[in-house]
Length: 455
Ligand SMILES: C[S@@+](CC[C@H](N)C(=O)[O-])C[C@H]1O[C@@H](n2cnc3c(N)ncnc32)[C@H](O)[C@@H]1O
Image (cartoon, rainbow, N blue to C red; front, side, top):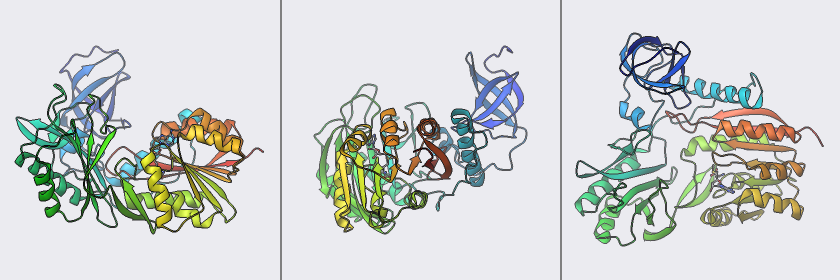
């Protein structure tokens, strides 16, 4: 290995991107990761730091630039990770994300060159997010809202979040100004002092209804009435203001205590022509039009008929199962967040659907209970969080003879791992369709179809 010293300068070509969008260069086989550097670009790279296996560098000079480079991006979006792919043309983002899925299936599931379908683009590529979780911190003695610099807790003040619905940005700015006006203190995580930790804003895509959540370190809320009056007067679309109390010192945004400060404790949105109440603790996909495309693809892969019994595991507020419940015999949903299950039951009622059963619990436990109780699903649809499926979920699911497993995943690495297990237990991977729910970022969603090949 060449000996590298901090501040050494090398003339190098960028050969790839990491999963999170950093450029990769290699010198004598030793990799460096370089922010804001795209494949094909020749750069002069300054060595920032090195470790045994890899190092970090910084672009000193661009000797050539990629034809796919977007030049008018605010670099704070890259530095904070708000849009870590924002410097790459959108069509290339899609190609790169698809390539990552192909590589993971090859590496983990030993499926070299699996014909992963072309990624379906998001209907909107900026200003799409329906939810913002914004940290509130003091910067040079002034309360600010913004985003943390990558891998740090240094707040970079931001007003235009680029990928969020602009109405959400407006609410965040107004909240920031009111917090300043009413003299409320920003959270200080080093000293565990101050009051407001985060402001979370959700806006229903179809109805425009807004929910604001103040995450505070303590329950007592100084001058809350004046603040709420001013905020709701300025934004009549605000239907709900909640407080979440988080006294912990960890990185979790929410604590366990919720208070309703104004209006109702939910907002209502419409997806695939059905209405959904969404409460503060419940999961809801952040890019509504792209999620509709994803769900429609999952329903197409499921190839449902009127006699089918379907399991919708990790069901959230019911957005997937309720979209097709009228086309099948029965839908069983399982979800660990109680508030989301309450939403799902109410959402079934709101849409006049009565052939659904929602259970609160861990999918890995409830799936086993259903098997014991004799539930015989024809299709099992799963939409787990990033960590993917639990081994006991997979063994229970594979034991009941469902003709297909439709797997929605936000993490291709755990998807590829779980595909291996399903294939060992009698299923075969048929199709993989990436759908881009997160333009300008490294994240990608996919739907996979596994069909039963052994009795
Ligand atoms: C990616 S979200 C999908 C939700 C829903 N299908 C949707 O599209 O809105 C994953 C959901 O799984 C839930 N969850 C996480 N771990 C779980 C577990 N062990 N068992 C059941 N649900 C779980 C989360 O609360 C979240 O609602």
